[in-house]
Image (cartoon, rainbow, N blue to C red):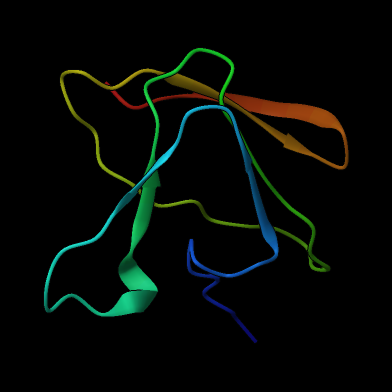
Length: 79
């Protein structure tokens, strides 16, 4: 079974400079956290075989390293 874990879920740990990106009338499960700060981190502990992180590709986007079980899986470029 799949589980969507919203950014407001307490299992997420955000370190560094983050801000909540909420739109009036949007389903709370689709709220996002955004950061443009170098070194900002988002971490979640879960049991499963994989994950999907969703977001936007934008001109001011940057890169994020994705780790699973402490190992770098890939670098995601959101530009």
